Amino acid sequence: MRRTYVIIRDDDVCYFTDPEMLKLVHGPLLAFKLPANLAVIPAVSSTVSNELCKTSKKVRYVEKLPCVFPISKNRKLIEFLVQNKFEIMQHGLTHEFFKRGLKIIPEFGINDSVELSKRARLGISLLERAFGRRPRFFVPPVDALSVVATRLLPKLYDGALLASTSHFLRRNLYQGEHERTVLKLAVKLFSSNPLTPKLLEYIPRQISLSLVSITTRARVISGKGYIWSNGFLVLAHEGLWLSQTLRREYLFDIIQRVVDEGRDVLVIALHHQEIAKNTELLTTYHKLLESLMTSERVQVSSVSDVYMELAKIR
Ligand SMILES: [Zn+2]
Image 1: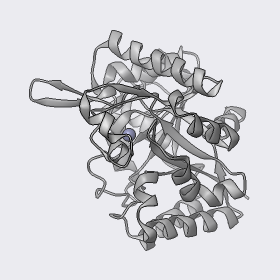
Image 2: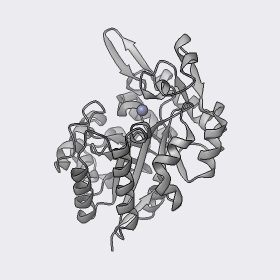
Image 3: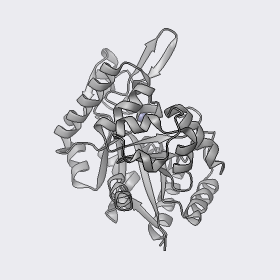
Image 4: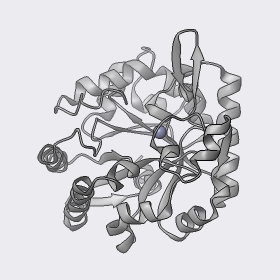
């Protein structure tokens, strides 16, 4: 029987993350030694204005002056992550935003190739030093990637995780209109030279990614849930954020539909901070995990495992 690989993607793990919170949220996965995939900020900026710093006891230091906090300084967190089965993915470098005139641009939404390369490489070395292994997959902060960043990633990583709907438009959820959301993603990422996926296998992957046609990409990803281009894997979630804005029945219904369709990969994204502080959401997540873990048609997986399986059939 064909199985769907389900990727649980948890964003914004950083210096301020309390391991107890991760334990609470992902407890059922840990109990069965199943992986969650964490998007880890290598050196979070004190300017990041979200729950990360606010919930921390260290907040009084944060408010004084802008600075960064390398993840390696939180030893308790590093030990916990190393001991348990987590895939460590790179989530930018600092997750900060840049001001360009009136615009506020997410960290990897800029087009400065030198700056992007510096940030990506520094992030790699910080995570490598902290966890003893190089991160293989990249998750851009707020799912924003500039064209220059898109071309950089295949040189440094084995894959990227993206969203086909904007981070800021989470209500714009999966409606079963797969082609439409995939096209949106493709329009954002790729130019329009037509090439067949087979031909792409013979082109260096950093070039091939920018050459694929929108329609070819849409076809490649639809029905499978991923793009594979010469060893570079792109996984996208289509608005399946586990959050208060998404009705539970709807989420379960969509997941069931995707599994029934026989899709290869499905990504479900969440923020552990949001789940941990809401009992109802936590219960929903644990019920969801229970149904996924007991389904014969689902394999809760790490991105590395999925990469390995897809590489076999390529
Ligand atoms: Zn983030």
